[in-house]
Image (cartoon, rainbow, N blue to C red; front, side):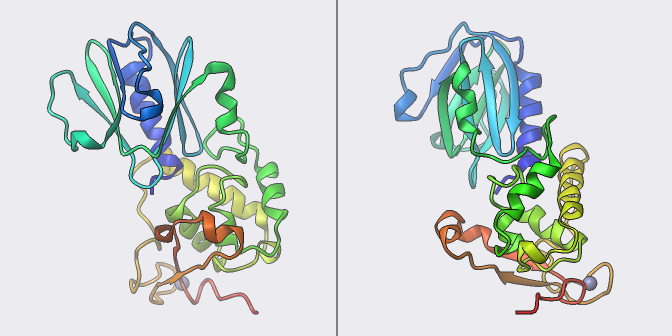
Length: 260
Ligand SMILES: [Zn+2]
């Protein structure tokens, strides 16, 4: 699943391709917006918040989310698309390029003034100019019994982390992902680590995972074979978290399991 760093870099690519350009074609391949036509509108800005992406004209904001498999690709006009046409959800064309959103999980057109409704429920954006570490700590701390590995996925606590970086952050802080938030040693330092890791991944790709999908490989600190486990969500988390997001990766020696 694409995480905040991917969305951040996607926004940068779309910004370079579209901002200041007039749209010569728009094609919304979602029923609700099939009749929307943005031809002639100039793209004003492109931004991201957590995993949410916003393409703005003077009149409207196009809000999209990649969910599990979404991806934006940019083609020169006339260039053959490198993904199946049937998976395209949105096409925005200028004189020079076609920006195509494939398999997007969310596509909606909002009035500019209503853009905030897409993100009002989210915690601070790890990659945003207004990143607020103290607020993220406050939100995480509100549910002290929840496993830190699940709390980091909840975008209402802090926005931008997914399955890769929750494992990486817990490893770097030597915290077992099943540790309840309330007993994580130095939670502010873990939040700072999350900010550092995601910022590095957004600006200096590619991030080379230390533990994610490195099962049975040696820990780079102590040589112990890394493990993968399913961190089973409970309560409301069980409905919210996709099955494919449940794998956690850790070093059993550097990150001892919390005592029950
Ligand atoms: Zn280790």
